[in-house]
Image 1: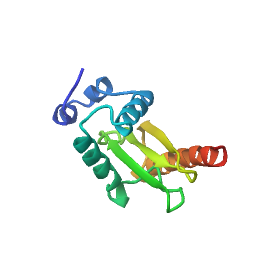
Image 2 (image 1 turned 60 degrees about the vertical axis):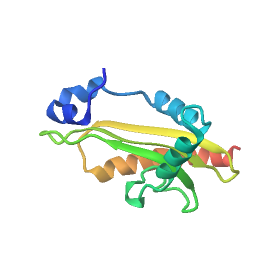
Image 3 (image 1 turned 90 degrees about the vertical axis):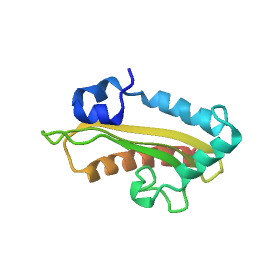
Image 4 (image 1 turned 30 degrees about the horizontal axis):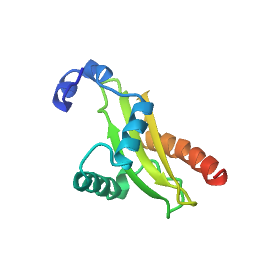
Length: 137
């Protein structure tokens, strides 16, 4: 099923029927990065937009070196009456120190916490992945 943002805002349960797995997000990033989805012009435009997202939206690179390059797309649900955030995500491609690229998708779900906690979780997971791949080229 596919629901619009407006439909999901009206019915909290719909977002649980409108999702993808992290592996699917990684596959989508790989197809995009390898220019297998769009025309070259559209592909380049989308990657440029993903590269230029404002710093306040970054989650993956929070704990990475300031020189780490990232193209990404964040995502988040609203917060329900109980203070539960159903989804808080960041997917992207980081450039490792050796010039190789790594697709990463971190999805945090169903947590009751300030948004900063979601940022911290994504940042900590991303840092572990970075440290592993940066030291094992």
